[in-house]
Length: 366
Image (cartoon, rainbow, N blue to C red):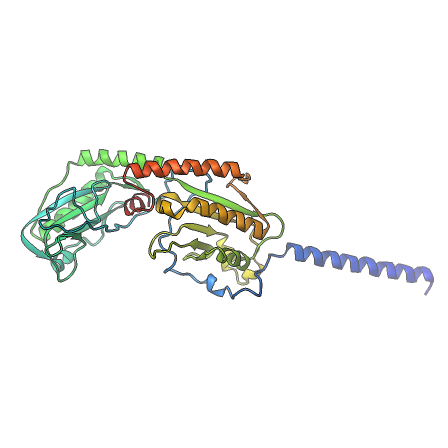
């Protein structure tokens, strides 16, 4: 073998080694980042958790407070008044039903009715169109309005339907359906039912819906990877360090409140398909969303401050940037403006007795 042939062979080997090394380095750089092996096993984070998730609202990813119309049916959340010596079923003394956001039809009785009879008389579906319907009884012993309970006796009932939710305002068709259900219940318990005027209630529903639509702020930040993508485990590990736990839906985590059963303070979501992949470690995630449903979370939780801090921490730890849904960087001055607008929104909601995070606000904005 001549010296020239040997030199060419050596040169070819060096070039091949360089190509292999370059490809290996590029592959490593492009591979999704994996969680630290020294941290606790995050396999639990892949499992749905219903106890810590609370109520999961549907959110728009939007960095500015804007009206939202992705709406679903709310639940009545009783907030019982203190008992009095001589309780009377008036519009000023309500249980979970409240004249501020409900149409309430009182049912008077000649005597007492049992909770068992009331439960048997309940309509099979407790909704009128997209609006929830609730029935409450005035407990003979406690003097409180409550959903009928077996073994208890009641001196009066009230049937209510919600005026508005995120599906819109109560309309004439829904009101008529409510009347049919309420009348059937009253007949079954031998009660006399009194309905408010339909046109007045429908007009009140439209006014409430207009107010709710104008003050339904749902915020969202997008965290985008600057260089290497993230694996689901890497995202879950970093989010868990900030207090996030697994949600019901794969690819969703939530920051729960200290009180069980309440909506989460924040939501974090990424590609569901990446979370469900056969080998999630090889799934590449290049962005995730942080979300806040403003009316659902108590102001005292300081949700926007915590949202900003979580976004900043994740961006720093995961080598990413915080943007809006259009990819525009969200700077500190922009965050300050949003925060100031939110304070005004909180004040407005409180002035209407619909403070963010209250039972009435959670029902209206759901």
